[in-house]
Image (cartoon, rainbow, N blue to C red; front, side):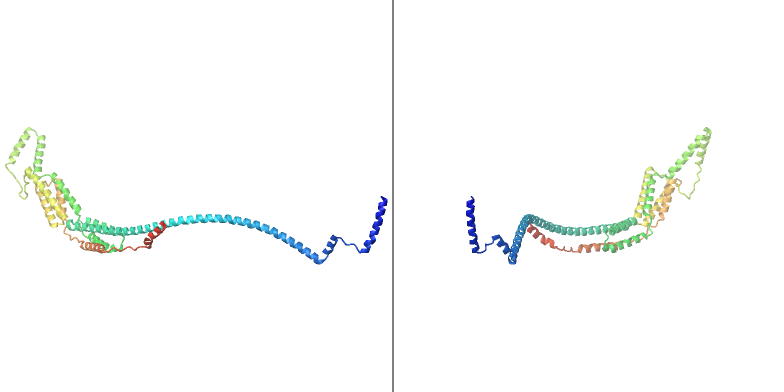
Length: 384
């Protein structure tokens, strides 16, 4: 061993001079690298490379994040696009249904406009017929008032008819009827200003006398009945001899008769004559009532006077019913019926002229609206 080491040692010693003879020994690679890095240019280049690498890595990371965001945004946009397409499809369907409904509504509007025109025409026709009916009713009322004045002289009935006509015109409330209302009110004032007799009251009094005629006592019946009643009462109070003497005295009084010649004795009438007397008296009173309604004053007074004379001549004046009847006829004989009543000719002429003018008026044509002509086309387009 030692011999080997010793052999190597001279060999190494022999190699060392050889190395020293060749030159200095080369440095290691890492030292050379460190030496190169110690240079500024190399260091700057390394730093730049490092910065570029870091920037590249950061860019890659940001690109990756941006890709994720873009992918998310694209997914959301796709979902929104799909929802938008669905909503657009729904909107299109809704629009189609609304278009169809609008077409139907347009057709209904056109039909409603045509119905409105028809209703306007009907209203005008009804208004015209209502005015004509109103004028006809007013004319009838005024004609009735004129007939009551001319035929019966019944002013109250005429006033009622004229008041009814004026009330109907007032309810109409149209200015074109004002002249006619003025004429009617003038006639009403003229009739109210007349000094009129109480025709219904007089007719009622005559009717009361007519009803009482059948129960009025006649003069000859009352005289005979009174004499018989007095003799019967006296005979009941007297005795036999007294009654005999009274009968003799009565026979003696018949031999001598004292009468007043300034008064007529009541006529003796048969039952048939009594019946005809009462009926004739009734007819006379009825004729007086007819003369009253006809405003014939002379005939009325003559009939009342004749009826009163018959009552005084043939009926018992001492009876209360006869006295009442005579007093009634006396009061009625003084009634003044000769009153000149006004006529309603001017009012009737004005009313007929107004009615004739309205009948001659031609109906005005109704204007056609735009909805009427465009309605069928709108409905046809909606249908297509």
